[in-house]
Length: 229
Image 1 (cartoon, rainbow, N blue to C red):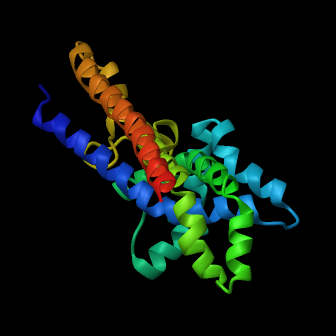
Image 2 (image 1 turned 180 degrees about the horizontal axis):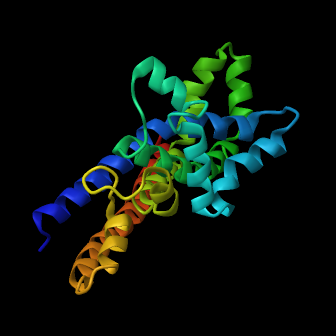
């Protein structure tokens, strides 16, 4: 059984993961659409930048976030001056770091799904008088929904497992930024902390498996629904 403090860590982890996905979803889908259907100079560069967090050491990503979003950074100073908020040492910063690390996985899943939509269906709808928004809303979005769902759930699974960028950007603050991976790391440093590590690691594995299984089930269900239309 988990202690009250450990349940609080699980709750914070889920909160961070959910916030990361809500904040990242619009950007991820826009980038996926742009990379799937856009034709513009520098597309290869944009694609590389989107996937950069996959190949960079997470600590480097966290350091870059620190440079940009610290109170003295270009974005952090604006947030501090205009809104009076800072992302350092709180769960909002942890959500930002998790969202950045999950973004490439989300974009890739959504992009593949958008590319799988038959462009001839969209062109046929346009020749029948449908506008771009109606074509997107009634054809492209429904047909790409399985990939959108898969990307969202996979991104959530990646978010709740984020460690390197989070600890570099917002540190390991109990009750504020200490998600499951950071709590497991802290427990490993304590003599006799193995029992806590086992409990927290078991929860982490269970959440990751549930997210992966849920992603596959939802994508299959959405796909069956589309084929049944």
